[in-house]
Image (cartoon, rainbow, N blue to C red; front, side, top):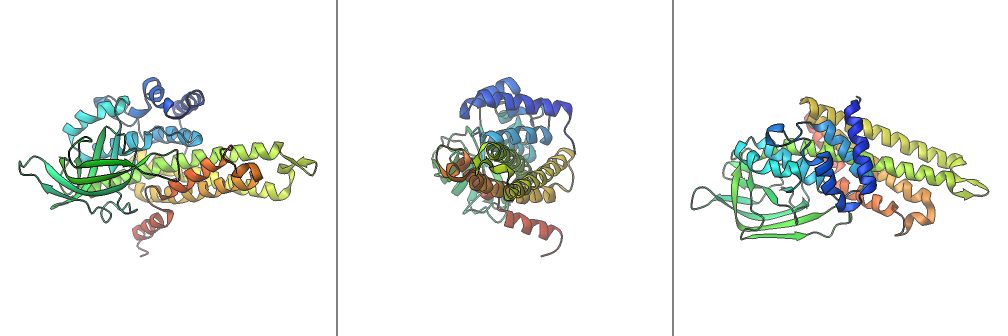
Length: 357
């Protein structure tokens, strides 16, 4: 599994840009100069017509910098929800803005900490009196960039089953509130709906199918982010081990430290293989996507958490101060582990797919 020369050039361009633009200020040049927001959007809707491998490259670089830009929630989850819905009118209406980065989208389906596309959805949708709109009632949690998104796609249970709806962000009965999260570099929101008006996206009862595909693609993208961040943790820790002197020699020369760094390297490379496997499956439209995405999310979550913990331990006292970035990576690691489902939940998905449960 190797990336092409063009994909490596994309990586170089994104890394260079993120080195010059920090935090949220990177979003506009990412979208305007590189076209990152529209990489996975078909050309007919104003995008570049690329795919999961290009998204993998961007997500890995965003992970290295712990970038707070709304890429995962908007350019991955929202874009893929629209495309998977098969609703051409909705795609024509919303995808051009998402591709340009002039608008951002959010997909709301998690409830009470659960991400299962079917079982997690308890919010209800009932047909409105005019026959063209629906009324949605319920609460959504962990909505990526949901407090600032221009487009809200909400999963709710209609009489036909789980369905996807467009809910106007400023509509009556819609209340968005920023959530206080452990990871301060990731914006999450709570969405409360009280008979809020919504418009069906796609076919009623097909929301579960759409969300399962979105979950797989989201996990593949998030795994890439986790690997990029873990790689950066290891780089910083190796550099510190070379320069920190104890007992008259760099701490990196001690065998115990070497072993821990070697173990961290194995975790990073194993995670990279898993993340690439999921990205290639997504790019090829493979039937293995669900399994590979679950493997990647599970493996990369645990790899990132372990390497971030080692970063703190091997930095010693400076590693537990606010002045050092170690705590930021540690918090991102634990937040990302919960996002889109825990490793344990994804392993249960794998076991179920193999007929082991």
